[in-house]
Length: 177
Length: 239
Image (cartoon, rainbow over the protein chains, first blue to last red):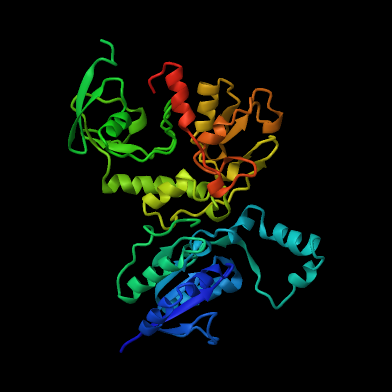
C-alpha cells in the first residue's frame, strides 16, 4: 500500500497543538495505519526529508531559525497545514510585536534575570523584529485555527487530507477555540 | 402621509415582503425571517452604518448599501447573500482582525464575542492582510470596569448607548482612520470621568472584549442586552 508521508513541526508555540494531536487517543492508530510519520518532535528524525505529503505546522515564525526551517519545509511538502492560532494568526507569541523584540528581551532576561548578555550571545537563534503567522512567510494550503484545535478537529482534517480531500475546517473550530 | 402608516412592497431574496415606509432594509428583512449579519447594529439605539457587515445588493444600484441605514422603497429588489457579499463581509472581518490585537486565546470575551462568532460564521480560517500589531493601552482606572483598546472594533455601541439611553455622553470618538479611539470625557482616564454614572450599559453592549467587568472572563462574562428593549418600551419608543 502506498502510505502518505506525514510530518509535524514545532515553531514558536507552546506544544499544546501537539498535545492535542496526541489527544486523538485510539484514533491515532487509524491515522498511523494510513500514513508514515517521517518527521516530528515526537520521533527521532533529525533532518526534514524530501517529498513529504502533509506537514502540520504548530507555532508562529519567531526567529531566523524558524524562518529558514519553514522555507525548507515548504519546498519539501506538498500540503502545508497551519495548525493552531500561533501558526494561523501569530497569537500569543506575536503579542511581543506591540512592544518590540529588544524591549521584551531586556524585560524578560535583563531586568528579571540579569542574564541578557548570555541570551544575546551566540548559539541560540536570533529573534526576528516581529513574529509573523506562517502564511505571511510561505504559502499555506490549509489553515486550522484554534488554541489548540480540538483532537476531533485535527482528526477530521487529517482524515480528509489523507483521503485526498480538502477539509471543511471552520464548522468545527475558530480563532481562540 | 405618516411614514409609519404607509406600506411599501419590495422583494428580499425573492420573497415578496411588505414593510412600513419608515423601516430599514434590515428591519424588513428580519421581519421576513431573512438573516443579515450585523456588528455595530444594536436593537434599542440608533444605527450609524459603521461596520458595513450588513451590506446588501439592491437591483439597479452598483453600490452595495448598508441595510441598517437604508430605508425600504417601493419595488426594491434586495439580495442579502451572494458570493460578492460574502467576499466583502469576510474582507471587513479580516481588516478588523488585522487592525488591532485580537488575541482570542487570551481575551476575556473568548467564547462570548460577536467578532469571533461572525468570523466563524463566515468561514474565516485566516487573515490575508498583514497584521498591524499596534501598541494600544488598556485603561483599568475605573473601579469596576476596564477598557482594552486592543479589542475595540469602533462600532460605537458604547458611545450611542451612553448618549442616547443613559444620557451621560461619557463616551465619544477621537482621531481619524486607524488612529480613531473611543475616549471618556476629554480623553482622560475612565476612573477620573465626571460624567460616567458607572451604570455599565457600555460594558453590556460591547460586542467584543474591549469593555468588560473586572474579574469576569470568558463564559463568566455573559453580556445581557435585554435591558435595552425593556427601557425603550417603558419610554414609549418603538425600537
